[in-house]
Amino acid sequence: MPRPRLDELELAARLQRSQQLGSAIEVLDILTRSDDPTDRRHAWRVLATIAYESGRWDEADAAFEMALQNAVGMKKGGKLSVAIHRYARLLTEEEEYGRALAIVSRAPRVTIASGWLWRRYVCIKWYAGELLGAYSALTTAQYVGYPISRGPPRSGASVS
Image (cartoon, rainbow, N blue to C red; front, side, top):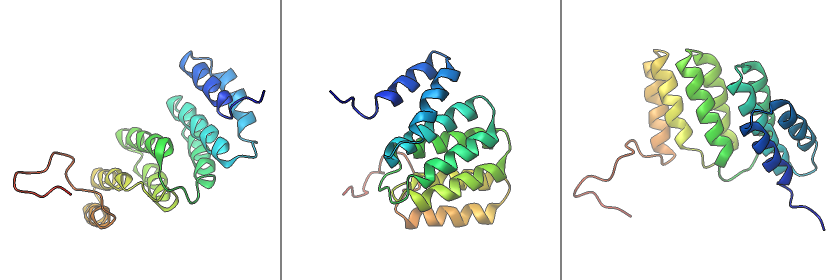
């Protein structure tokens, strides 16, 4: 009986959680050569996560780039967008603004419904002191439909 395609990915995630990173990377390396672009995207995303959690940012950048190459035409960003958001937040905290901007600016072009990554882009621009760029990104976020406030609607505001 054939195994479900994400069994290897689940195994790699378990190995990662149990700090067996070498074994997890071996499993993920096999998945990066899969015929299925979804499997490849997931494998590259997890490899990127392992790399940035280990402080290997160059490897994380390369793995995210491979994940994004396998994500062309995705309607939702899903776990890839969440991973990019977390990585960009870490880079912003480390004041690596250029690297954070590079990865966040690439993601919305690939994952159509990742409007909330524009908010991260705004934050990076703001912290980098690029206030005009932050305002421009905020305007773009509004244009693509991302709300400015994450809070509940104010009284009297219509909810569709």
